[in-house]
Image (cartoon, rainbow, N blue to C red):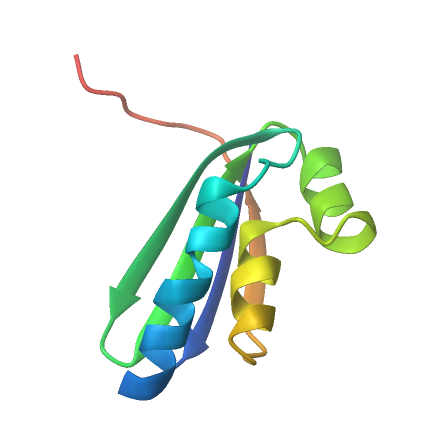
Length: 95
């Protein structure tokens, strides 16, 4: 599995745009291979973290389909996020 994290610095006005744009992937068709996705907010930062079945699914959603939730949300908000991709090597699940 792959963890993909995109984040951008945002001001309060932009926050509203990001949160509004989040509804697009929420109600739209999910890209193949997307397991889960989270929109998070910190001090002046909005982040989208997505878990993918494989790096191939992730790469296709980024480069070919432009369907990665981070791409959809940040582009609609006029933001250019920083992006990182990590291979998941362990996890903990609740009992």
